[in-house]
Length: 254
Image (tube, rainbow, N blue to C red; front, side, top):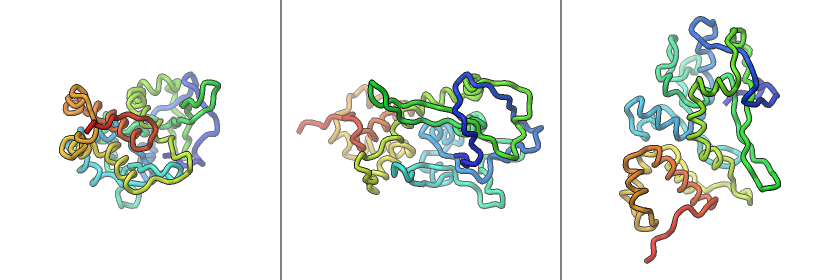
């Protein structure tokens, strides 16, 4: 998450143009990877933990710490920076990112920032995505000659796929109790489980009394047994149920 002092106060569209290139030849190479809050999405964690050959619990314990969003009281996972002088990212070396092809969406977007806001329209509330420049004083990438649009940058960096995977989860993150009441620790724990710790969430589904309580079709159970993306989306359904956003589950009839 960028510092607000580095955010250029202009809203961009997919057609907005800019010049930028990051490569080992620029003097600031990897400087933006230190002393920064990098928020992770459920899809980020699937890719990163699989790249490293770890379970979700192992990955979360070793590489992340949890914080609470002050606006919504939702739990969020962030990369745990090293305790060196630079507060370096644990995945970055002087040569670059060691998990580059599976790096988080926020890293892919840089130097573009992306956000979502809830907008009132004649047809009700809609979620609208927007983009903005992040211009840190030390960054020399803007002095390069390679030209992009926001749209072409997203495709080149593979962040369009990440956004598609993350969209439903991001929409959930915008929701809070209309009374302003914060989530209790039990709700936060369940949301964290269903968002980030998917291997443990899977055990919760199949090894607890979950399926004695909820009526889940056999074909859906088969999918979430085999497919982590299906499991992730099942987690989104569960979070919506917890937050009373949508009645996504039916209780089993006694």
